[in-house]
Length: 447
Image 1 (cartoon, rainbow, N blue to C red):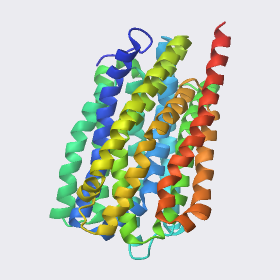
Image 2 (cartoon, rainbow, N blue to C red):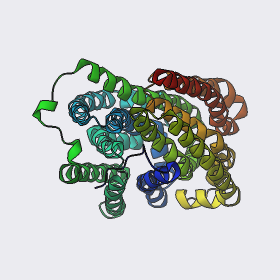
Image 3 (cartoon, rainbow, N blue to C red):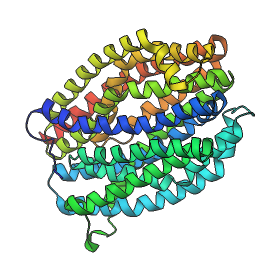
Image 4 (tube, one colour):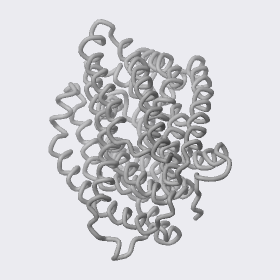
């Protein structure tokens, strides 16, 4: 297992080398989530597909909000110590991550299980699918500790520049997930719960394999007894970074839950079409999202190495790459949007296909705005800024409330389609100026 420093050598080569395995990891993670959608849509029908879609925002809150947020936040601190070659504090930060990962996981599991029925009711889940929706998301919530520790293990490996091992692990578990999806739904007759069970087992295998590779091949990440000590400053830094990332994602997810309430009011067919479109959009977003996430490790390592000019060059390349990919994705959905929706949903319902296609054709071209948004937000996290990125999440949260209650009612589903692009524009402007200010301050610290 190779530790890969992003503080030296060719910037483009280094970022691409780091980003490709991360892209493939995220691709397969998205695929095994999308497989749920495809199999459910093809074998269980539009109603079951809508049930999964109705829980999408809650799923994002658990998996992306807290699972990925905590892991990524802790990983940023570890990457900083790796960049500054401070092995003792690196190991101490890993020890702190393990202890608080358990504490946070157990607390979140209890909270989610208690609140799930209320959350589904709040977001106006239709009565004919609410039981299926609850049975699906309850299983995901019960095993949120697996989600957090998988993301934590992957983030630790990426923090030392190893994005290849998480990809290998996820590739294996993705194949297992596909097999289990088919078996649980079509052979064992477990219905929508089978998809959730398959996802949980796949994530559990990912977590165990990550732990195995860390123990065998990433010795720098293995703490000793001496590293399990209480360090108030380190704990506050890690919790601040972890919860900042988690809260940032969670605020976005709560906003999505509110938006989902508006979507759920349109009925089962539109929910199904929107669900398929979101799944397809998530896959098309991956190239842009990958470099946005990569930049947090890149910036964190280079902050530790005190190289602000290298940070600026990395940001510039990431934004240029995002623009090119956004144009390519926009052209793809313009010509093939309807086919994508029909493939994912397995539906011949014209309303399902038209709804999903409309969403993709309006939403995807604006990835050219989403790319710098993700780049600047993750770069600010890499610089250790905990509050400023939260402001962008609050902007998104408020924007989704405004759209849900004031804009979507008169505009209908078209209002849903333009919601995120409009919000992305506002967020990107705020994050651009915030990043420039933060980078200027970092340079002054070094002067």
